[in-house]
Length: 537
Image (cartoon, rainbow, N blue to C red; front, side, top):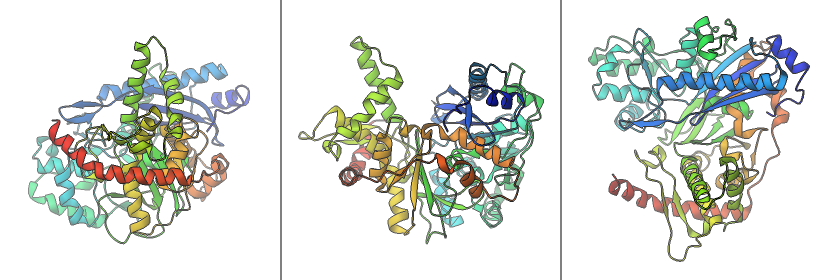
């Protein structure tokens, strides 16, 4: 995913001719944009930092921040184009939007939000999941859109009867820029269970849900309010004049650009790592951590800890998801920066990460007996609706900076390891390889080595593994524009980006054994976490 070497001439002409393709992804802490050539090479990029807020017990982003962030990311990318190629970005061949999956964006008939956007991070739907999972015989996690909807119904929230459209962040942005109420099938699979053969919502479960709420007399049925499902490669509308102004307030970007179906960050991760064939897998590690394995066959039984989602072309995928990834580690890095400043030293965030993260490789294999639990928010796989980040140690633990950093990194992968054990040990799922992407892999090979130890399997990285989501979305837009319409998504990715995947790194036996010891300590330490939640209100 490296920036194309040709910084003038070919790239400039391609941009001026309107042949470049743009993908934008709304991540948890950054909105990222990747501009690519038709061959998949990145020719420019941009980003905009933002943060979720806890308001009245709900993790959310303000509506104004969504549009400010979208324009800010595009403006950053347009400035990068101008700086690199001395041309203005006015036309595009294709465009696509991605975002954090799941969550709850409920709008009325006028298109206005009925309640603040509820992100994937909210673990407030336990009662809904406890009812829907046995009713559907399908695991419904707390962050899923249908869980938020049913919980709102159970709670008697007044806005429910006014819902005219219910979607996700990516679906909402796409709708406002095109007028089309659609989502990609991978994104849809985090809204409601999918029938992978019919490439649509599971009709039998839709009927069950409608029957379940029939007595509430809501004035709508489920399919009345959900977005239409589209597979990868389908056309999903065009950028309107109003949409172009939201994206580029300067007015330079022309309307009429074709858009592909909006996808979730899980789908873009699969695409960016070329992990859409059966038995392939990838792990996205950043603010949240999730590992996804494309299945050959259905699982033997329902596991509440495992999400069943799909690839962007509809194949069934088992996802081991952890709400909590790098947030606690990020908080400690920030604290180290404050300590440096107090001592009169200056260190940028990038310097702090690049210098401190590799220290983990110098620590003891098991992190010196330290315990770290990284739950900033609730963690579904651990059965906790709230989180209390904590560090604990015994008197004879080896309390060094190296072990401390190692413990923090190990901790960020324990919840996802819990889910992976269910798949590999409980279900016998076969994995031919894991490909990693996300901010966890930014600092040299540290993330790759730690991940290999945590999953006890070889891990390979695509080029630009730290920025893959926006690039994956751009590739999906490029797939929509492909000349060979009969070409499948796996074949397209194999032909386009197969050479961008690096060599696999096998786990060091000492690291793997060290993680196993740490993981056992972590599982025992969950009792401490539960006590902390009860004590620290």
